[in-house]
Image (cartoon, rainbow, N blue to C red; front, top):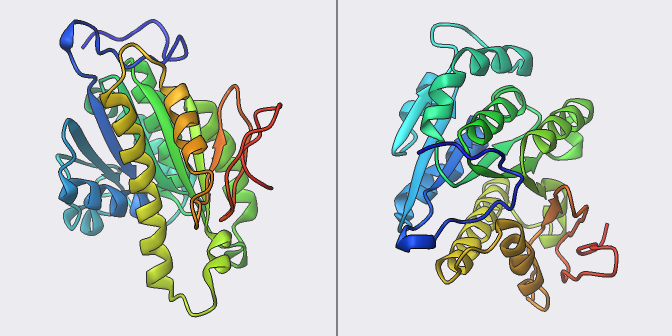
Length: 257
């Protein structure tokens, strides 16, 4: 598919001429690949899955249409700088795997691969002509990765057209009895819900912008008993939402900080 001049120009899902947009859900690192594994199992119509990791064992256990091992034979050891170098060395391969219209890029921040390689993957997808929606999962504050997370998130925002942020710290609002496994499963379901809702909107749309669809999904969260922990950061919107009703005000703010 020929790249567009800029992924920023409209971010349109090209459904003209009866051709559905090519949609890729890509996971980068452990957290992202866990989500991709679930997307693959759900077999969403028209969705291709891509798993990218520096951990060969974890990647082998991930089910996806395409799997890319970065830094083959080299130990990254949780270092985002090494992960970024590994992704840069595979940029052509990443670009080929994400060539399409819309790429949902899921990653956890604070570790090595998600923090370092995800921004390179996002840039590669945009170079291939895709509109990239980053979905970043932030670790608990007690993990002590604040600086690394902030730096990684800044790079991811700069590389994506829009960024949805899920903060694990909001999971404490669900109660003290929630186990760690249940908490991570809930986050995975949140990511799947976001992707599915946007895809549902797109399926009935003709030449509409993806940004509008992301906004529409956020608006529909309003009034849901346990609203999703969504923050949306785009060139137009800076917004945040914990597990509380989501709403817009005159500045484009979503939810409560």
